[in-house]
Image 1 (spheres, one colour):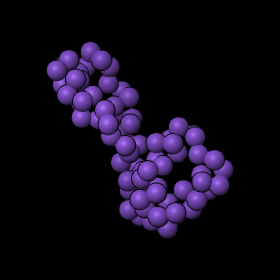
Image 2: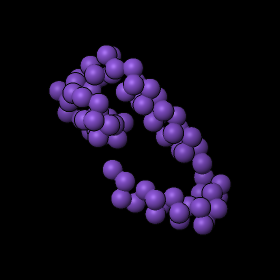
Image 3: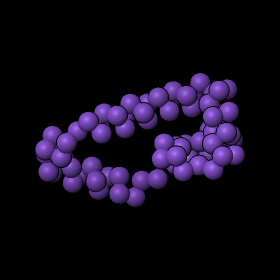
Image 4: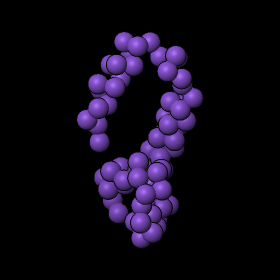
Length: 74
């Protein structure tokens, strides 16, 4: 697995949606790649931070802008 493939699969990894072989390849890549390990940690931090927010914590206009910005993000 290369770095590009790992980035494409990170959401599925967090969702537990990877098959056993792909999951093993994902984790094996992390062992040898400091950059992807850092990316994974940053992703975890982002998810944790955003999960802590409530709808009331974000102004409606900002929420709409964020939703628009990430609507087609993959």
